[in-house]
Length: 338
Image (tube, rainbow, N blue to C red; front, side, top):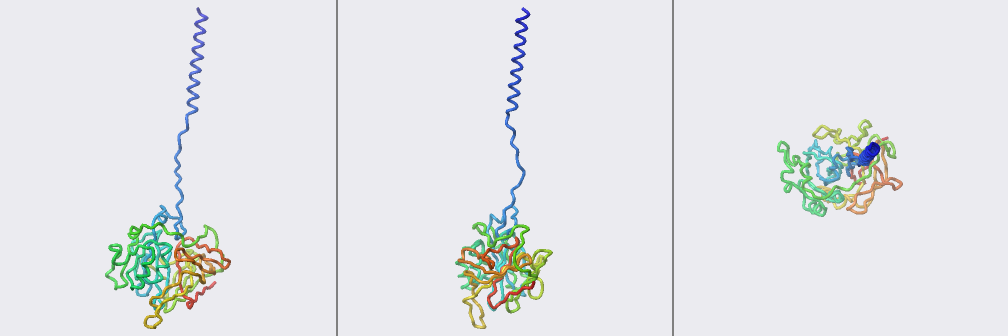
């Protein structure tokens, strides 16, 4: 009787051991728990500056272009240090006016807002978005009506524009750019320029300053500041400072020499109605990172931006950041010093 009992006990122990082995094997084959990565994707690049776009906001909203006065009476300007691209165009009597394009930043107050000109439709065609202005002569309004933009003049802007009655009209109209993005349903703009990668030096010749000889006291000089990596804007005899106290000093100054046509030649109406010819090609000078690169601008149609080509036909790459584009005519020379 002892041997069968012993055999039964041994078998029971063996079966118990086998059952424990199966449980252990099952434990080893359990799938590992999934891990969650906390790494955030890098922000996209803002299309009009080449800089990172925090929250990718510049890649999800349109452009707001605001016409800005540039006379000595209207100084200082408000908010244009936050524009991505600023265009300086010649208007009547050879004075200049600005068109400031906002996309990556949203200033609350921009001004002084002034009227539309015939050149403006060619500036905004590639980027679309909102075009903000005070009003304009019928021929100029007819011109901007051809562009694919949402127009916000003083009558249509409502609370998105206001007048500061402590200042004298017409130099007292301002725009709430941060509110104007809501008026637009068009997508983010295409890039207007190419940009260099970090640490990549440009070609070209050394340049410590550049002067665009706009007439009637509107000549502007740009002085290279190696400490800030910007070009300090000097107009009306002194560096230009905006209402916030910031000095205008963009990373790039692009000078496209263009022809103006259609202006009234009479001395009492000189240049009224003139329009810059921004389709075609012409002489180009690009000031970036303490260098000047000479070449040609080329634009086959108004739906696409101009290409900036060096002397060998390669596209010029800018420093990421704000860009001023100057539009002198051929009688307004551009000079630079090493």
